[in-house]
Length: 130
View (cartoon, rainbow, N blue to C red):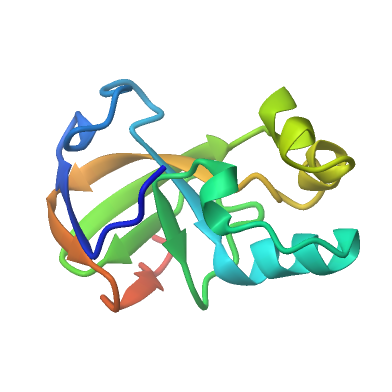
């Protein structure tokens, strides 16, 4: 996973250039704060790229967010569920997979409702619940 300063989100497709496109799991998202908690608990210093998520957000708690809509810049993402950690997380660091199973530590997956270019530093916020 290579970090970029900008990316294009496409409606019904997900992240432009990503290998997995379409379906309900178009974009995977992790929280910067939750990643830091995991690293502290393990005494590790893995880069967030080890998680292999498409998007890292700050100031947002993803736990129990299924059905909510997240605005990133002008794009809108509907959270469809929790991203469950795979065995690659255990290969990255012993104990990481088990810790990620708690409190949505693996992040969330979403579908793109409104696409557009997103950039590092864009505002990220929850839309009010209907």
